[in-house]
Image (cartoon, rainbow, N blue to C red; front, side, top):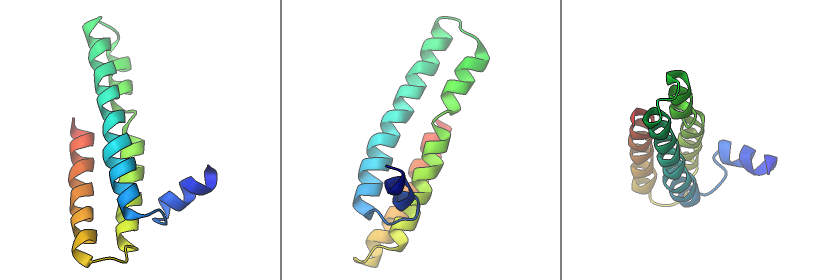
Amino acid sequence: MKNFIIRLWQGDVGLARTFWEFAIGYGTLINILTTALTFAVIAVNGPAWLAVAIYVCNAPYTVFIAIAAWRSAGKYRGPEHWAGAARMAIVLWAVVMLAF
């Protein structure tokens, strides 16, 4: 597992898997779950610090996987336009995930 995380960080996992599975799939799911938990804490009048802590706990994963996808795009061997599109999309995705 440790070796896989290192490979992912270095961009050695395929672009399609890094982008679609780890960013769009897992990353979006993590963001939805943390947002729902944040709203649940707010709905029950929980402490504000807890709501904020839950809300931002997805940020490290988002930043990690955005960098991993960017690096993977740099090592992509297919048509250059796909690597460029993936880089633009991953930046947009990360901004949206960090903002909402």
